[in-house]
Length: 615
Image 1 (cartoon, helix red, strand yellow):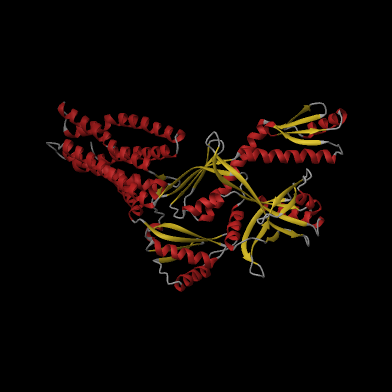
Image 2: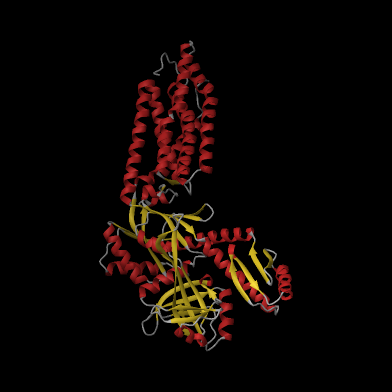
């Protein structure tokens, strides 16, 4: 019989609608101002930590809406921002360095919804507020370090082969020039180095010299590695901030995008994300100390660095280990209540340090702190110029063999020690990064964007409904029901799928989808009217209206879907947000227009004698 649906189709549609409503509901409950507490580097968050947190809040007369322990994370909710900030300061001071105490915006979704995995949509920066950084990796520093490492390797190999050289200096394009006393020694060195360094271009230079340059492939790999490692380290630093749903991804060949939605302490975020702190451990040479006092030049294998108080320290250029081998760094105080940083090394770093200190007991070892800071100036290409600042923060006598654990003293203040330990825990950047673009969006502006987006959706929905009801009457009301169901399904799918973030362009995609969602209904209804004008019976007209327009509706929506997929593949983050919501909207509008309206029409008119349609 025409225009009849079996019972299972109605059950399927009702079940789909109920699921859609359930998974769209969390978006109505909003968010609470909260504090999130997590452990770092072995520190566990359990019931005892929860009880201690409650004691701290009670002691400071801070009232929380709720405090809970979920999957190793404590979440305390507060009624106002003032109370939240007071709680943050109190907890940060009491819990110490082994815990991350982060300002947070927590969904206020009821527990009965979270039990079935229903969560609100993830909102982008433009809706939730937060901070956006576009960072550029300083490749000049990357290649300069690589150049120095290459020179060190070449000279060490010549030393092992007992091939003497007279001088070495850097050349253009990150190369090295090594000079020898005569041509025969030069040729011997050339043969030896060419045999063991096939990834380098090594040629004769001048009368008695050789020139060594890294291949383009090697430089390309170094660039790629530097960006990838910096991304990993930046993600570690973001985790120290306790930000939920952060975005850290590569853009272009040497740029990194960092987006931290919902973050409130933007100054702290910039300080942690943008800081380029590195440690180098080097041996001190006291035998040439008089050179610095007399203003004489320092031998080639040494260089002079200074302490905070301007005292010169002569260091070997060769670095024992760098901060790359640090696995953990915690803040504490020594027996005289002076700040210190406790360092733990990985296996490789521990072996290197153990061997070195065993062979150099009684000598001085310095800790050199290296930081790159914004100079406030820009080059001809409008790029920020970074200034390298180096400071000897500690000089200590090697009294015994050191392995994987030791401590750094001589730090000026408790705050400085905390900051240094956090940066070292998160990891030292492979190369300096400079912030080339920064955008901060406050929560107020985010709420304003949400309000404007909702108003746009509402007016788009009202315009579509008015048109359909006025033009198609009762059938217009049927289309209206399916448009509302379509909106519910779009929201539920975006809430349900991981990795999807709603932005302002995404809202534009929803508005557009709702506006054009009636297209399929218009095609169907106009075909029904056309059949009626031909004199067809009402059941036959309804049947033909849906059947004959099906292929046209699918073709039209498939072309739009293909366009959305292309926009997602090649577009920027904003364009991708628009493409995602458009693609989801196309799928749901086809489902509701073809199956949803047909189900209602069949229920109202199927198997009945109808003289006239309200269309």
